[in-house]
Amino acid sequence: MNKKIFGSIVMILTLGACDSSSTSSQTQGSTPPPEKTISTLTGVDVIRPHNVQQIAEGEQLYKQHCVSCHGAKAEGNPEWRKALAEGKYLPPPLNGTGREWHSSRNELHNHIKYGSKFGKGNMPPFQNTLTDEQITSVIAWFQSLWSDQLYAEWLTKHTVGSVFVDEAYKKQ
Image (tube, rainbow, N blue to C red):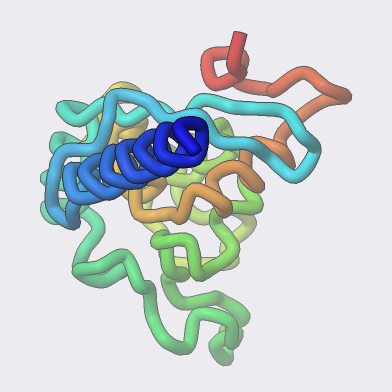
């Protein structure tokens, strides 16, 4: 009888602790943790960094230089998949609903720095406007809009064997 009562008390306390921790979890609009561990489909855990200062800088730079083409919420042009008469494409979404997650960090960086490749779009080069660090901040901002699952898929996609291309994001 005492074991049943003790077991019931432990269960109630455990459930109460779970309930109180869920009310203190991150709410929308609050500062994300500095990093978050995500398990990928391959079973490898990766760290998703959240450099709040870098993301805030990236958001401001995005608003200043990118919003007119890619939209206020990085949603891109609704017709981004269709080629125009001259063969160019409209700005894609950067919020994780488009194709940009298929590109490596270097590809994203170079696309921003040097503009559209092979005349396939109207993306201007920002090499004389943004520093490499500022480009990295813009990428950090729009990647912060991606779901954890998509971010983990992006990291998994850009691996060579079991080694991540960007070693800074591999969990040690």
